[in-house]
Amino acid sequence: MQTVLRGPSSEIIISPDTPIVMIGERINPTGRKVFSAELQAGDLSRIPRDAQAQANAGATVLDVNVGVASVDEVALLPQAVRLVQDTVDLPVCIDSANPAALEAGLKAVRGRALVNSVNGETAKLKAVLPIVAEYDAAVIALCMDDNGIPATPEARLKVAENILNEAAKLGIKPEDVLLDPLVLAVSADPTAGLVTTTTARLIRQTFGCNMTAGASNGSHGMPEREVLNTVFLALLAQAGVNAPICNPLKNGLAIRAIDLMMGHDEWGMGYIQAYRALPKE
Ligand code: THG
Image 1 (cartoon, rainbow, N blue to C red):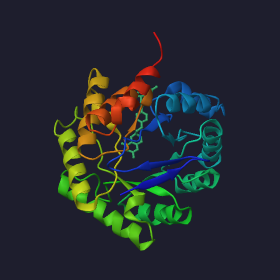
Image 2 (tube, rainbow, N blue to C red):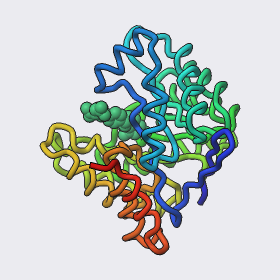
Image 3 (cartoon, rainbow, N blue to C red):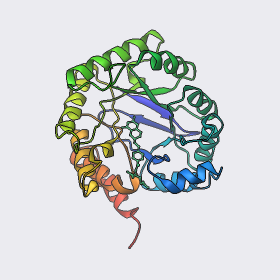
Image 4 (cartoon, helix red, strand yellow):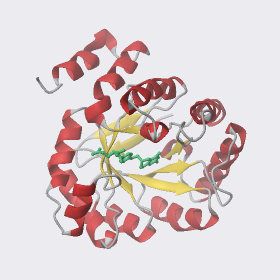
């Protein structure tokens, strides 16, 4: 199953037998005080820099989120999208909880975007899926609904099935739904990692869909988060998550190492190139 995304003049394909697609997470004010303050002051100058740095580190899709208190996301998100695509020829992943901002962002997109995200809540399905269909985008679907995040893999699979059915009613194909099995913090529940990877395996076996996941959510509240994030990216990949949302500046080489060890990097050239692209000491 292939998910096709496009930048202004580029195309990237997400599929189970091609290299992992890194969705760069850094254009997001969550947990970033300086970037939040800049956005609140109308200063977008960090966006092109973050876009270029993530592309250099191997990201081939860039998440764009400008959701911070007291900014007008409907006005700001399209500006951010344009800045990103004026800097790098990559598809974007439009990230907002506000459907009006998603639509404004999609209007500014060149190519074929990913929407982050819909979930199984009745109101979300109704608000987001028609926009995805209208703009011929692909969409990330979170395995949660009106009852929250299900505790078991089987219940998360059921939510995924429901979202795929609702998407199909609007002509959105399974290859354009990137399922997110959801990553919760292992500091709060030590079985959280296992629940995510088991969900991912079930999704791949049942629907064959491509998947994303926010790997770094899993390490919240633990020391040496980078170790947990790196190991978890490998476990997620083995379970079928082939388009993780992550920090390419931290995870870029590990992702290429995973490709190589999974047989998705002929002659190791992807790994060697990522090694050569590392910032010099
Ligand atoms: N699934 C989907 N989308 C998601 C997530 C997911 N979007 C948000 C998040 N999870 C993934 N993106 C981020 C963005 C920022 C941070 C973490 C995940 C973040 N990083 C540093 C921190 O933890 O303090 C900030 C430091 C820095 O990078 O400067 O906050 O699961 N579909």
